[in-house]
Picture 1 (tube, rainbow, N blue to C red):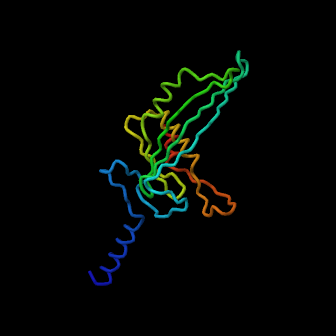
Picture 2: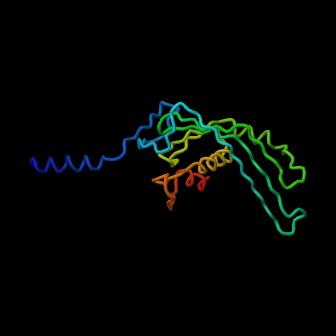
Picture 3: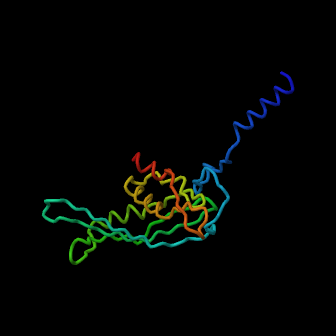
Length: 183
């Protein structure tokens, strides 16, 4: 091989291997990010936990049924802990479920099991400057609880380039959405 051919092969190999640096260390249970962009427009501080109230209402109607609508309200506190610049953890607590279709708006009996499943495990995730790229659930996480937590995470996503001005953003499918569709 000539020097020129060796140089060309070296450039092609380097180009083929170029890309984001992978940072996932499988021996570190707190890491979920496969890469870290290094950007931090939201200014989340590693070591801090941010607390959010999460409230959602769902109403189902069925024509011809004795009661034509059923509705529930779910309230919870979502603690988001910043483990590192790109690795975060979601913990759900104080989960309660209310039957809002009844006049007395009673707390539902099934809340014990529901609450236990949502509060049992933290959900580690990769947060890349406003976008949840990866989720790393506990091995014993039940599918419906994981999907509920994915819904909570989707509510914190924001991929706007500039938070100071209005902007139309088209979200790309993320691992959260792909995982929900495949479960």
